[in-house]
Length: 147
Image (cartoon, rainbow, N blue to C red):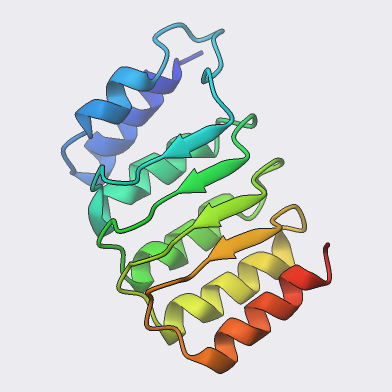
């Protein structure tokens, strides 16, 4: 059994990205130890469009995470497509902050599919993105039905 840190480093190697040193240090080395918080906050800790994939793949092994903050991380639509694929079965993720990223219609469609697949999510922050108002409303309506 691998620790979260080992899973993250292996994913970085597979994706051919440099590990985020701050995240790497936060991850436990012991395979029997969970991440010590219910929030994963990358605000002001730029991971970028490619670097977010190993983070998400590691997050898939962190069932205690309820809040994911990826504000202002240079994410584009492809990163949100990966988020949809990887986190569709996450058991406790209730809030995702994607504000101030370079995401638009393609990302909105991925988020709508994610909301169809993952009924746990209750809040998605899209402030400062290029997602059109009508798509934001659709996402908001899906979230409002869960309140």
